[in-house]
Length: 166
Ligand SMILES: [Zn+2]
Image 1 (cartoon, rainbow, N blue to C red):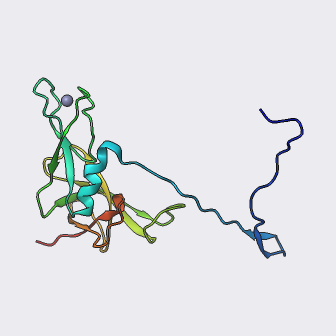
Image 2 (cartoon, protein in one colour; image 1 turned 180 degrees about the horizontal axis):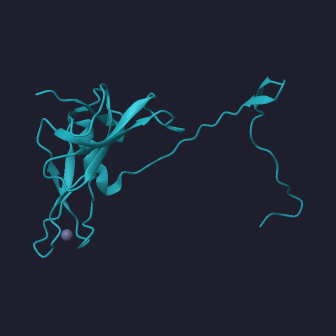
Image 3 (cartoon, rainbow, N blue to C red; image 1 turned 180 degrees about the vertical axis):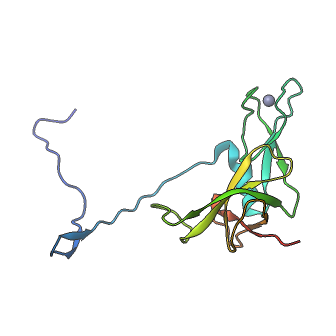
C-alpha cells in the first residue's frame, strides 16, 4: 500500500528527439533482458549446439502413442510419462512440405529478411518441423539437409536447412 504522501513519478530516461517537423520523432530505445529456461527440452537445445537433431518417443509399453515427435515433447501427450530422446540419423535430410516467404518478420527476429520459412517432413517423424532455408529457392517436395551454426546461437535458429542435391 502506497503512503498518501508518496506519488508516482517518471523513472525512465528522456527519449532523444531526432526530428521536430513535420512530425515529432523520438528515438524510443527499448531493450530488455529475458531469461528463458528450456526446462525438460534442454537436451534438444544441447543437441543443436553439438550439431545433432533430437526428437522424442514414448516408450511406455502401456501407451498407444509411440511415434517420433519433433519438435520434441518432454512428456507424452497421451500417457503423460517422460518421453525418451532419439537422435535423427546424420545427415538429416528432409522434404519440404510447404513454405512461405517472410518479408517482415517482426520485432526481435534474428534472421535477415527476406527469407524462406520452410516446413520439413522427416522420415519416421510424425510431425512437421518448421525451419528456415539458408539459400536457394524452395519448392514442395524438394530435399533439404539440416546444417548447424558453427557458433551456436543457443536458440532454435541454430539449425537451418540447405538444398540437398543427391
Ligand atoms: Zn505415452
